[in-house]
Length: 309
Image (tube, rainbow, N blue to C red; front, side, top):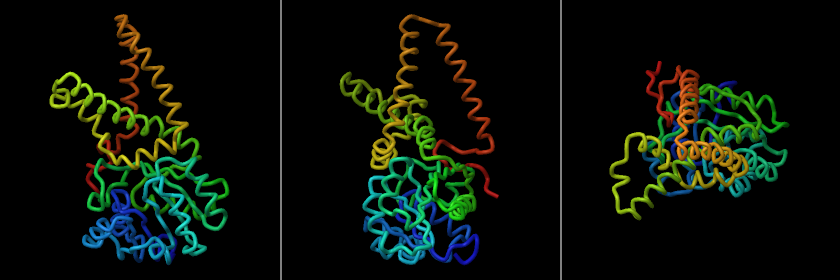
């Protein structure tokens, strides 16, 4: 790093929505002297080069990380084992590695076996995104007024944790530091379970339409369309999230199923009091959620509508 707030070179591995948005945010805020990008797909690399997403696009992982001060992993969780094994011999001892993955506990344990004590991996998870994907979907404002959760190891270098924290703050995020276990339980209910439900309800609707020969999807109400919008998210990414956060997700599915059974029973027996009580309670909770984020005028996918200063 040239100074406390600027890196000589940042390598971004994976140039989809998050990776491309990071590249643009880094450029906008002048956080690095140069940026190097890598994507496995030739087409993605060509697009990234065409739109000048980064200072340089490399064709191999090894070249991409060679002189990086900070390496940001923006690839599916299933790629981590092979990826970390590949880049390990080509990193500087002072290189800090971070990521944007949505599940932490299992992934961090797997990575620890590969890098051991040699390099400092400071995991992070920006809670931001859209249903779009690819290098052309990125925009520099994606992380503004969004939370980023950092989940360091117990023996992580405190100085490097601060560096990663300041990086996310510089591009507009509010940062929270928590244990990987706590992160996974929180995200299981606030993000992972809602996505699982969205995927499932779309699948159910499609199956119902086929079986009944009806226009279920054609005449979907706005509530259905809004709720199921997240079902168009990257299938590879979400497959990996559910596999790597299995225990927490299964726990939340169990809790959700129990609560759903209460509603099912109330509907079956015309239990008006129970239905009204539950709906009134959730309405109050919804108001608290809105109040907690009242300074953020953004849609559910993180694209800020707030006028940027």
